[in-house]
Length: 140
Image (cartoon, rainbow, N blue to C red; front, side):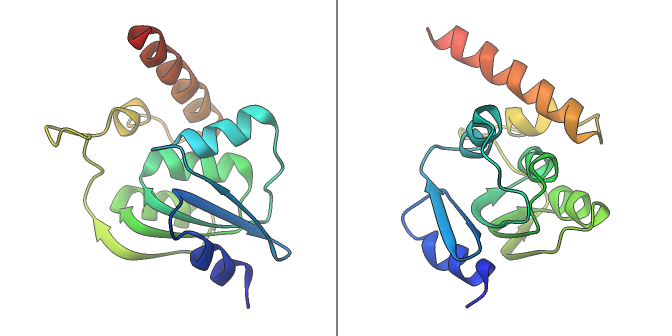
């Protein structure tokens, strides 16, 4: 079984599954938080296969920054597909959509809006960290 097949199988009941060398790591946070947390913690996932529920450009940028090898998404945005392909990361999906919409269904996901005008994964990571920090401060 390939790492990608293992990650896809492990996705059931989780928000993300990451597999490298047959070892699987799962996380259950919503949105981009699982990948953002792994990057902040310094967890090495280079060369891993990732299965995720929803992948937009924001998640795709985090995957590029992390150096993942391949991606599967239950739902994938066209922009994420383009971004991953531009960085040589094979991607497959169950469902392809134009955009990732916010949870209330009223517009674009705020994380997608945050990275709309950048193509640089490092800048995207920085912008996403700032956005998440602002959102957490507003909730407190």
